[in-house]
Length: 288
Image (cartoon, rainbow, N blue to C red; front, side):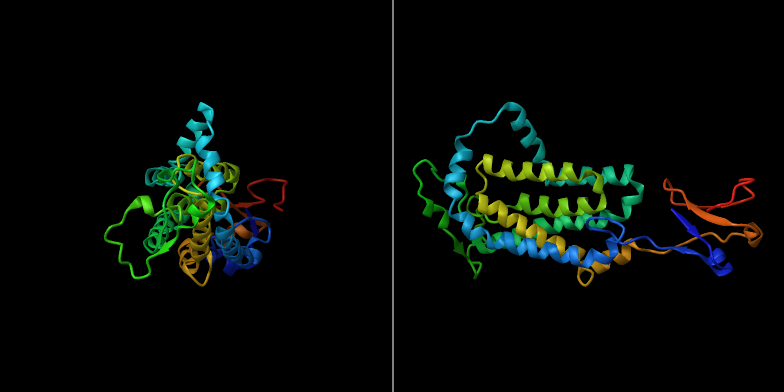
């Protein structure tokens, strides 16, 4: 990253601002960041409104997943994706970023809150919604109206007897995986295809093992996107994370004698230390 120095004040007291995190990157990422952050809420709303429509096909789709035999290689891959929203898998991913991606370390707190907070949101919603899991239903003889057995416990009378077999909506794994994928998508954009593949793998795994209906995983994705919106919006938690990640770091003062000629500041990407170069360092060559 090159930056031309204009005045002695900038030369001696220059500071470097860390750029704000971008959802999709690009040369004008900061300009369009609010719009792209708002799109998370729109997609979340669309996914949540799709839940009633998907409930109409929950039983036939669940029956197909129950009867389908997958090759061993695909089964092993789906088993591997189950670690993506798991606490141990999230810890290992964050540890990898901490060790191997030093320029992305400042985003670890946001990624951790995205993953852990999404799981908490899913658990809170499960406290109010009672729905049987497809693995507890005989899908061979079940009619489509079986999927419409929704019970809303607004008074929380059944929280004490929290039975996981009747807490299918929303999918906690899908909620966590969706929010975590959005964070990784923004922090490490080069791996977007891999994150998306793992997210789809989590979705399929939940239905193949009979843990959730299609509407359950869709609802989980909706709540995961909603939580990601909260963690990225500048007026919500995103503002707090932006201040934490955009700390000013003072640049060491450079003697005025070094600026008798043209000069540029080069920031070493490895350790982010500014290095001053002048035409004295490169005889016969003027810095651009």
